Structure formats: structure tokens, C-alpha cells
Image (cartoon, rainbow, N blue to C red; front, side, top):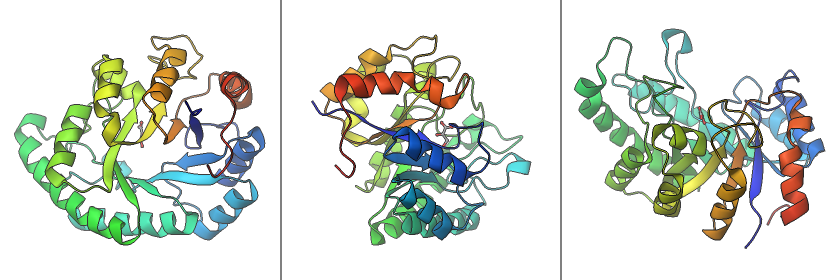
Length: 277
Ligand SMILES: O=C(O)C(=O)CO
């Protein structure tokens, strides 16, 4: 089986470095071939693309903008009344993805609006999400881009988030029925919501376009103390033939590079894919 390919999530890694350019350089120096950034929008895309190129890095995932974070927004895809803002954010994300050569965009669903009742709003929010996803799939297809839906756990991380299980996301993807919309599997969130990782990974991997990892419950390195056996989970992903990227989206428990010893060990044991493979 081919070794897994890892991506440095620079919205989480290298917090000891200020600014995305410095984090890009640090990720390249460590030996990553790829990075992902939730919201790269504070920097001009061409400047970021230059730094990434100089660092020998591909950018493999960005998110649609969060919306008005001061009003508690965390994505707009399923938020009633925010369709125009979602479409504007999608256009911005597509501009950045094209400049960065980034093939995937996480289409953030967003939260049940403050004061709203999840059960009462579920139908309306799903209808808005389906409408926005059909639009997004068409826009992305023109640029040969993939849109991703990520369930985020509502037990701990984000109780108001609209999309919180792979079952819900898969049902929405089924309804939209566009091949360039896929599932973003964040193993941290899946463990917290349901456990049953072997069963869920095997069931949903065929529609997965990106994976992210962090230990549970502390959201630290895969090697940090916690519930998950990543030696087993990485082997499972290899055995199941997963060929996408695995995003290191975790909170370093100390110095980022020291905390990456688990990845050095993986590369020592499994070898490193050649860049561009
Ligand atoms: O919160 C997360 O896990 C995300 O990946 C948001 O993009």
C-alpha cells in the first residue's frame, strides 16, 4: 500500500510563528509537501502562492469565508437569508483557489442562527444548503475544483453547527448528486460524535475527498495522550486505499516541530511519497 500524504494545516500548526508566510516557510522546511489554510484571505493570493512555491508546497484545501464572526457566524452555506453572502464568499474562495492552485474548497455549512431552534429550522436550513450546493457545484465544475462538506461535532466543539455527522452529510450529498462535491472526514469530530471509526471510515471513504486528524479529547498531536490509536487508523486508511491528503489539523501541545516527531517516525517507517505523486 502507498504511504499516506500529509498536509500541514497552518490555521493550527506553528502558532509560535506569526503570519501565514512564516508558517508556510516552516512547513516547507520541515518537509511537508502540502498545506491547508482555513481562511487565507488576509494576504494577497499571489503573494501567498509565491511563498508556497518557494517553500516547495502545494496548497490542497481552503475554506469558504466564515461570514460575520462577530455575529457568531461560522460559514454561510445553510444559513437562511445569507445566500448572497455565501455566493460572494464562494467567488472569493474560487479566486484564491485558482491563484494558489488549490483543488479543494471546504463549503462551510454554518450554524443554526443565534436564538434559532435546530429542530424547527432543520428543514429550511437543509433547503438553503441544497440550493447553495447546487450553485457551488456548477461554479466549481467550471474551474475543475472540488467542494467538500465537513461535519463538525456539536457535542464539544460547536454546539450550534448545522452539519455534524457523516450520515447527515452523505444524505445531503446524495440529494445534490454532483460528483465534484465530496465529504471531508475529520476523524476528531467523527470520534466525538459517534465513535465506530472503523465502520464509518469504511462506509464513507468512497465519497471522501479529504481527511483531517487530531487526538481526542485534547485535539493535540496524533501521538498525544487520548482515545485514538493512529497507528491503527493510518494503517486502515492505507489498507482502504485512501490516496487523498491527511490534514494535520491539531493544536500542538508544545513546539510544533518537536511535536511532529510522530510524522518523522511515520516517514521513517513508511517512506515519503515523492512530491507531485
Ligand atoms: O473545525 C474544523 O475541524 C475545520 O476543519 C474547520 O474548517
